[in-house]
Amino acid sequence: MSSKFNFLNELDNSRGVGWIVRVRLLRVWTKMDFNDDNEISMIESVLIDEKGNRTVAEIKKDLIYKFQDPMKVGEYKQISHFGTATDKELQRYSDNKYKIIFKRSTKIATIPEFVNRPYIGEYGFQFPKFADIINKRMS
Image (cartoon, rainbow, N blue to C red):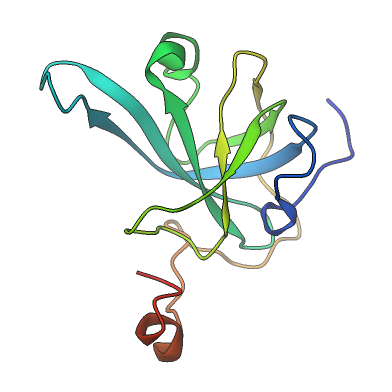
């Protein structure tokens, strides 16, 4: 694995799939298909890096078979060759402007637990500033 990586607060739309991040999976859930309650349309997750930056990752329906098993809550992963997109969701799970989009070329590998990191807790929860809630920078 490469030792050069990016922190989640560095993500933007400038690189295509040229990103490498090291993260812990805080939450993973499925979204059901709007037309068929028995069909999963997407897997979403909240990721946190060793500096405490968070973002959302999406795995679209056609890639669930490839990435469903490696996405376990609490595990540490190195993820590379993914895309990014502006997070325009009304309900936001992080204050990061960009989210990770898994592609066919995306690679994911288990890594050791972060060393010399600030305490981020089991759930990575931090109380947002009241002004950020009022100004809708967090939900």
